[in-house]
Image (cartoon, rainbow, N blue to C red; front, side):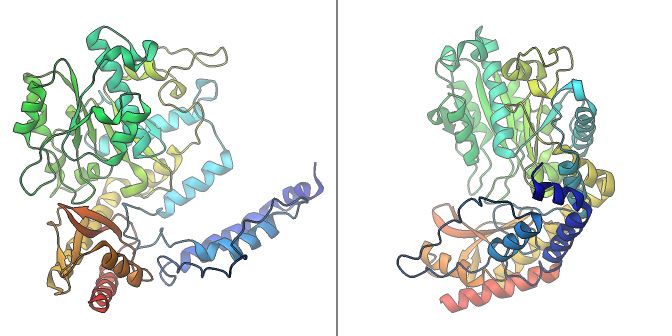
Length: 468
């Protein structure tokens, strides 16, 4: 064994203590650090920030930790903190962090029943999540890396369902065997088109259906007309929480259309599924259980570390037909196929452990409190924006996202200047809503409080007045 590697092994408890101390320091300073650090100044010509070369000789973990803290840690955002409101970004609850550390410690590749403990843990966590979101036992689930992979997996199963209806198997014969395919949706997330590209169905197979006036929710009457105009079976992608305004399609109305039309219903509930935890908002996901496949992103509102999502489906048989991996060293498909037969990955870390930890530690009530507190924070920021003459809301605050812009001359350039001016205190991301450039603040972090809302509102208001 390399001498330095052997020395690190001998000192492993000490090195882990040093890493724990560095982690504790990073977490303790989240509130004081700039949410997004300033961009480093551009160096003089000929002195670009060149990457360091690969070290030739071993220097050990101590030196690597010191180099990381010196070179890279100061440039990392406080995305785990309470005022990182860009995208839809959660943090990591204490229990989720503990679970994630132990995931690395035990280093499981839990895809095979030959080493089945991890598979059983994942199935238990999936059962808890299914219960959390109000899905029935008819839905089986698997962990994947994020909403994009969850949507891709769900649509891959939908592709095979289309083949079943037409008497072919895209898994065996290729997507071309289906002929033209139509995927109907009102306000699909960008990952849907990406998934269709990956699956060989093509971005042009996505047909945007008109939405309700002033809404991002699909118009059920327009969807029915589109289905009537679609020869043969189709795929409908419903939205349970759009990115800009957290609008929800009427899942019950879409379900009723199945009485007259033949389609696979995939619901993108990446973060909207968590509305089920709040009695005041659970009606928004009424009908979710009727979906043939469901996407839920866990590194958003469940507050587990990246990367983690879950994919549910009612047709595990078709899922296994798509993703089966035949090899002598793997178990057979059987009635309960190993996880290796259910996703594109032959290997994945035991990402279910972080979810298991936080669900086991805080239960339904603990996670309901996080969801309801974030919703209250979003409402408070929306109220502050509405009262600030320099800012204006672009849409009602329906759940946990505030979509807003400058009251005067909301150009992309001015909004970029606003974002950058406020970035030390709060991070928001750009968008366009109904043709108007805007900003969006998404609340999904377990640490965020009303005090953070006040700091964010003051920073955004001051930046807006500075721009004006």
